[in-house]
Image 1 (cartoon, helix red, strand yellow):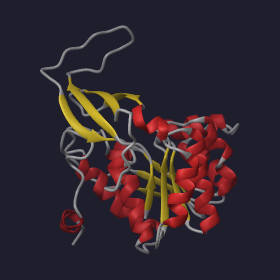
Image 2 (cartoon, one colour; image 1 turned 180 degrees about the vertical axis):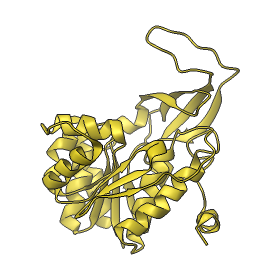
Image 3 (cartoon, rainbow, N blue to C red; image 1 turned 135 degrees about the horizontal axis):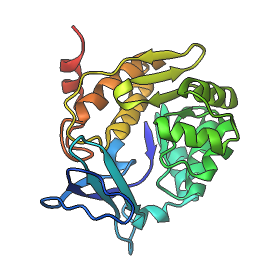
Image 4 (cartoon, rainbow, N blue to C red; image 1 turned 120 degrees about the horizontal axis):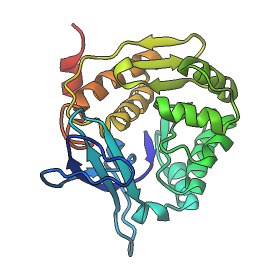
Amino acid sequence: MAVVGAVNVDMVVATETLPGPGETVVGPGVEQHGGGKGANAVDDVEVVEGATTGTALIVVDAHGENQIAVGAGANGRVDPERVRASLRAAEDVGVVLVSTEIPEDAVAAAVETAGELGVTCVLDPAPVVPVVTELLGRGPVLTPNAGELSALARAAGLASGSPEDEARALRERTGAPVVVTLGGDGVLVVDTDPQHLAAVPATVRDTTGAGDTFTGVLAARLAAGDDLLEAVAVAHRAAALSVAAVGARAGMPTAAELDAAADP
């Protein structure tokens, strides 16, 4: 599996409530964690000379919900030609996982090159940047959360409706599965027939990185040969485990931990 995405340092403040517009909230301190949608899913990264690592400023409330603002740093220097060359040179790439915290031309290069290589592309539209709508015809597997799903449907000029309606409309546009993470409401998989997976019981301390865990495990399991629903079930279990610890990566389970948490 190849991953094209961002690397960040996460600066996390835990507070009782999230701030509203113009509001200041105070927590007991600041914790530093590794993050970034690309780095949360892969362990091989490139160093860009003369650029700082991207930084995410994160506030997490007492229920584990979060607000995130990202300063791109070196992520803004991801070059589309380097993306194309790296993917073409990689061996045994079963799936290309792309996230959108990098320049839009680099996102496009990754999705397009996956198509040229004839491999599955999983596109995590977080955030929903304009180029995503331009790439729908390339047939990526989309993994939005509920808010991103609605934003993407609007950006693509599709009628708003229920998550299933919006996912169906996007699936008709892409010709590929749409997998929607719904937090406490589970996961919606829209392919030939919609499937809803109920939420996995979880101890929620911090939801930061749960979507990244889900998408990373989904892509890895597809690359390993799982069918879509098998891959979604494992990814769903991984995301539920990940929210038990503070920080995007701290709770991400190992393969052994995932196996131990599997239903008997």
